[in-house]
Length: 255
Image (cartoon, rainbow, N blue to C red; front, side):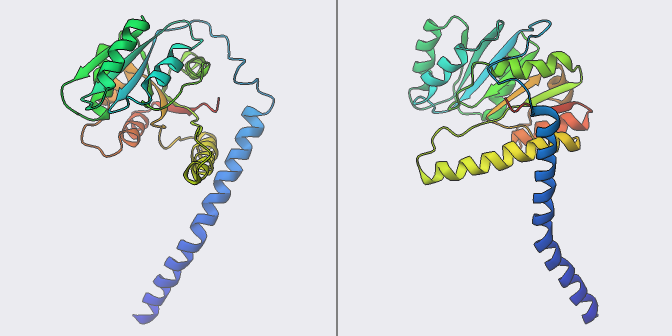
């Protein structure tokens, strides 16, 4: 009995030691292969692809007490080079100036629509409401403090236009505040987790989860799986697994 327990202990210790090393090599090999096959020699992100057609897109921004960032966020969304889009901002019962800022921005940008919640109901409910009021088949969900690159919508839409079974496309977030220690740590974290691992997962066949900062969705796929769960701690993982369990593909767009 004691010998069996020692064997189990040794196996557990070996697993704890070798598993991180094994996965690190797995992610690095996959990311290098992705770069070699799909990114090497690819045009710059500014040289966005020409699409055969440009379906309508709703850029969705769930906002809770994001008054300090909203002007910059909406301005960046309005600068998209994609020719057919609207912006839907969900004020999730904010207690700061978010609601007033959004109403003022709506008078400045004709493409902006604002939905106000009387109380805070969470990001998942905000995304659900945006899906209900959007007239378009494609939704891009952006955090309230994120800045979307002007070419991002076209790059993400290239996957949907060319892939009828693509249910979601996750983007490639970059850290803007790099002067602080936390910012520098996040640069490394995002480069490793979002950059390297997403590339490797794409090669191995399954992107485990979309990024909550910037992701695009096909509404018919969301409708089939029941949209975002309201009782989940991480709605990003929840919707990713539901889509893939229903045979929808999730892709990663490094640009």
